[in-house]
Image 1 (cartoon, rainbow, N blue to C red):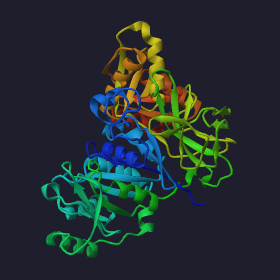
Image 2 (image 1 turned 90 degrees about the vertical axis):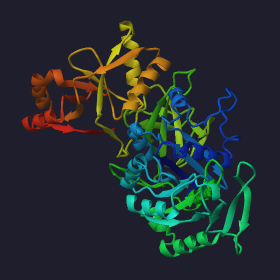
Image 3 (image 1 turned 30 degrees about the vertical axis):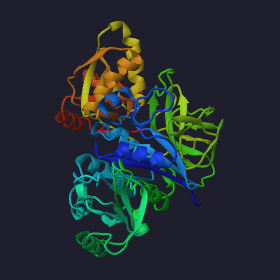
Image 4 (image 1 turned 135 degrees about the horizontal axis):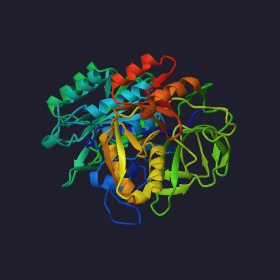
Length: 509
């Protein structure tokens, strides 16, 4: 069963040009009409995928949104991943929902730490990667240096699919190997406006012609199987800002990227032609529409054909819900979806019934695996400025933890909630959103704890443990017991003393 769906993400280090590339892909895919525009309301010229207030201030994608566009009979679902290292958890979950990725590298900087971290996640899941070396219209490193760095740092075979004719001040375009044409810069802005010259004698300076010859001999040819297994990456050169290489990216995803892949579940792999509709929630986003306190659960379709109004059972709830107004994401226009296929992402509006990691299915017999919660590396106490707002704070913390921005722990002794995050920036986002969306002013104070471990074991063992360690115990939002440790040593010590309990650093959703 071949599918015309391509569900992919773009991964990069901050500032490598991911937002620009996203925008240009949407522009060429016809999903938006003017780069930087925000439809109808507000003339704020910024990329439409970065819509939260804190993002406008910081210019980074904090939330992963979904953008869908169609071109030449292929439906592209682009999942936007936060590029900032503190959002590794949200990003990680988004990468569980895609079938391939575009890795954007700055031609001058090469592979940066964040790119490597995200790449590791792709490797864990054997997600195939297409590499886009951006900003070749500026001064950059030698092409061979970049190619060899990708090969060495990421242990991947590289296969150049295009080649820049000079860089920076001597940039004269990009040669596409497949069509043997050169995309040329035009006008004062020196951008690509559609002019492609065939390769003729003298069209390429001698030193660059020599490089190209060496490259075609020295690097392996493109091999679809090796790419789809995650062993080889095709490398394209371009400039998202000046439109070089953007059409080639769309073409490469359509032509080479895998269609929706089967997904692992507790009872074996679920194929696309599995007889019932199944999917899993990889992200929950609160307050997408500031006028309505809604929450959207993002569900990745795994099998079947979804029809509007269908009843699906979330594994966390156990009783069916009717999905009356699902959302398909055509950039920022929320079009109501009538049907969706495997690989599509559906937004399901709900009031907190759907959670990250939930499986949705018709018969409630499938459970997808592999969406973890990570032990937080930073723990803080939340101190309210106005003690009468305790109820609003609890609601806000529950909402935001459901969304995966933070984790929240309620200590058995003491009234102050404790929030846990994987990275510092999440704390800034928390304070900013508490104020903007929930009108709650709060400050974060140091907590005596260093890390948290989920506890599992018999009721008797848990009770015995609680008798001695009540001041170190909390419950997470699900009511599951959590040991709040003052140090890593503390964890080891308690593990030795309580061999009948398991202290886990991750919790499967």
